[in-house]
Image (cartoon, rainbow, N blue to C red; front, top):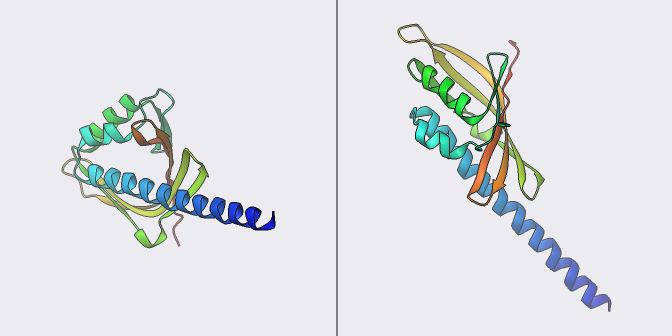
Length: 150
């Protein structure tokens, strides 16, 4: 009886560890695709990575943008100027909230500027919430927090 219990416990632990590693790897791949799409100003690719829901939330310039289409419209305008995201990969963390929800955290430098204007560099703590849908991991919210000046 004890041997069966131990075998079951070890099997359950290995399955859990395997799930966590797979989840983290999958989420990191989506995050990398998101950063690449943003830096390439590729709205079509960004569209596929954002959840198609009016509940999608992006906080930008201190204001909420609700819905995927509204976010894409805002990005389309911003892509006309300077828009480059550079996360610190050493500080990137994937937090498993549940089997189908993950949070991504990374200290990030955002370089932004209107067309023809000198771009600014802004340090942010980026927080993405991702959900696993039948088609794969999708970003449900983007919540940047400004890093205070030192």
